[in-house]
Image 1 (cartoon, one colour):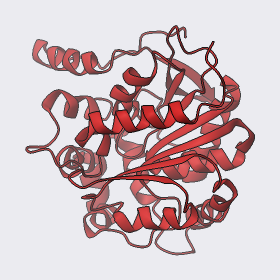
Image 2 (spheres, rainbow, N blue to C red; image 1 turned 90 degrees about the vertical axis):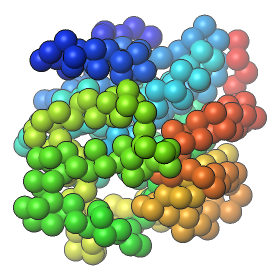
Image 3 (cartoon, helix red, strand yellow; image 1 turned 120 degrees about the vertical axis):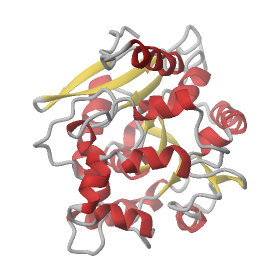
Length: 318
């Protein structure tokens, strides 16, 4: 796929430049852009010589990550199939408007625009964290374009609980200053969302944080947290409720769920709730992995994903 090199963050010093280069080596993918309204969303679109005739994969990230989270999975899958990994508006290398309504439904609508623009068919949805709700919302709206589902530590229903450490991020003034001002939410995730001793490797942590280097550039991170509905009065509650009510419609599809069982946010009961809607889903539990399961159990997860995709290929490769 044709692409243009993204405008990476300008470095203020040679030290910062070398740090940027380190994370860019982890993420050697070009950018493509789609205009949604008056803003642009960035997406990776990679495919190798053996991709023709194979089902494409659409990767949808959550908060506070971006398409960088999928970097290893992109590298693993793209030689043999088309891989598209989106950056939601306000995230990654996408535009970060300060006056946008960063609600779940708008993220779903943006993703639908990308799916239509690329005319994706026979898609495998791959999603994590908020990407589960966004991706499944788009899947239910464009059901004829999808064939398979792969989920990692996510939810697709009104939240049954909100951990205290996330509730704190919602507190007036304190939450906004901490999340958007000091980048505490994204920084904390580099060691609280993983079971790796000492947190994510430095170059990986830098890559996760790279697009979120200023108050304005962290606006979507804060708004994702603020969009978690505490009651039915919140407009996103009904969106999540609608998504959950549609899960049974795809219960007979090939579905795989891989879960880091030490996740303190999307805890194992979230897996159980999804499994209740999809009793025939293929489930893999990783006892020593946390929320960033594809970081903590990378090799094992990649192998499970590859095996699942190969077994459920809907078209013969040419």
